[in-house]
Length: 108
Length: 114
Image (tube, rainbow over the protein chains, first blue to last red):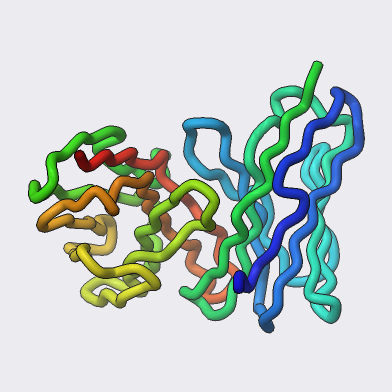
């Protein structure tokens, strides 16, 4: 059983579409990270959330601690958004649970 | 500002050979981590170091050793490589806030063991 579940596993969208990636977790957490990994590339932190909502450019992340759920939204999607998006739940300072990732492909 | 630097980026080993993956961060972070990433699985923690001079096992430590030589550097050693250790390895460090510090990752090291 994975403590962090992401959906969908794979997502294909047309350029310009609004995209939502979901992350549910089964344990009590102190924070949650959204990460981005481009093909063959490194991993970049997009957001770290402990409550509410954060926005950076076309990316919006929300978290509902009571419902143990977080979402990552991409507005006006672009082919350069094509990547794997990973959520990571923070249990303690050094204990993270990682989802298996959502592979996003945005078609021009 | 280089962030987290890990070397080498690619390595091919024969079964039984040894090697060390090097990682350095220039952000004065206390916590550093080694993860492995395998297809269809989330990142799995091999070892971590909460501060200089301390190391702890993660989820999959067997076959690996680590050294936190100083605050900047955290190395991962495979003493006798096995095909099951074929993977992509990521070093990471965490921002200074204990619980909510941002994660910074290296570019990854792709290791193939034949």
